[in-house]
Amino acid sequence: YHLMQEPLAQIDLYTNVENDELNRLLTQALASIDLDSVVQYTLQEAGVNQPVMLTLLITDDETLRDMNRQYRQQNIPTDVLSFPLLNKPLVDAPAEQLWSREETAEQDEKVFVTPPELTTNLGDIAISWPTVIRQAGEVGHSPTYELVYLIAHGVLHLVGYDDHTEAGYQAMVQLQQNVLASVGQKA
Image (cartoon, rainbow, N blue to C red):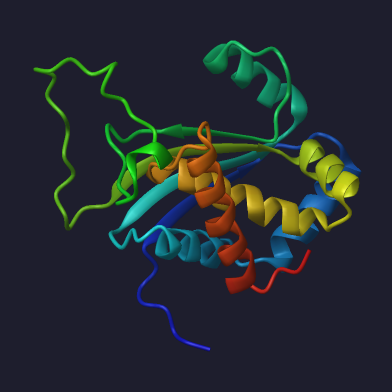
């Protein structure tokens, strides 16, 4: 057991789950995990050690479907969506494991750089709680385990990882497994 330094991450958590039973299960799951630790360990695994903030929305399939349609032109619900605010990845990893914004950024575009002592806003993560429960049931582990896995996945996306390549996917899965082990989540 080791003490962590000052929390690096400020997390704004919003939940919006209409169904009472689903809401009860979500409240239980959130009560059984330390959200700060999950994010903290994920940042540590990714080698990010500067103060950051992010927003986490845990909501329903319909909301995720709307966001997926609006931002990714896919009219289907999904488990997790990440909306990085950074212009370039924070993590130091091989390029094939990271997303790139180069093609969208104009060369003369002024990039906003957060002074090191200030908190960097990483962006937003949205997770569909009904999808979490379904996926957990399909593979036979707890919804809490699935939720931690997806939160770690979302944070890794925010700091620069991308799973569109096999290398990126493998790197993310390994890091997510490390986070689950760090916070004591067993499948």
